[in-house]
Length: 186
Ligand code: ZN
Image (cartoon, rainbow, N blue to C red; front, side, top):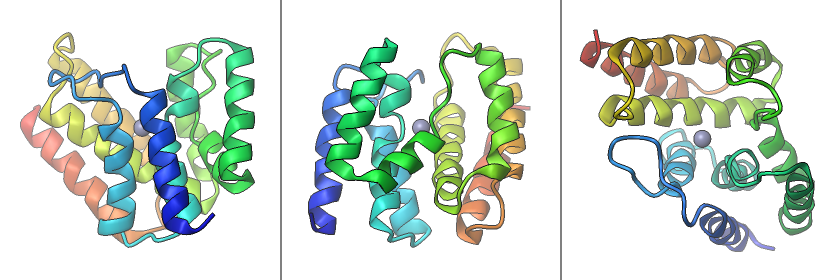
């Protein structure tokens, strides 16, 4: 498959998987907006043109957020491998949380794992954290009190500490987003 075909295929695939999902922010935007924004940040702001990385960015939340059982997860993993290849699958898996762990443990593991990720997975996670901080800043979930927003920003900063050194532009983007979030919620 050529690059444009692979990226469009990833978009079609992710849009189908996320079709009835919405983001948790107060604006309830369609879920697919998020992976598109992450891929766009990588390609157009941070000048990352690696096709496997961009395809993985589009697919990055599909395994974590669109399966309910272990069997479904296994099937989806095989489908991604067959359609998009081993590299796209491996980057996607690197940024996928283990949902068998508690939410608290998953958040802790993200901090622990960040420095051990491959370079491409680090870039993807940096872009993901940046867009999440932007979303939380612009439209925090209606049920989140101020202290939860602040805690989220602090946690994001800790994860990103382990992702630095792979793309200066991505880091600068994250730092600006974090600063804007802290200015709005203090
Ligand atoms: Zn994400």
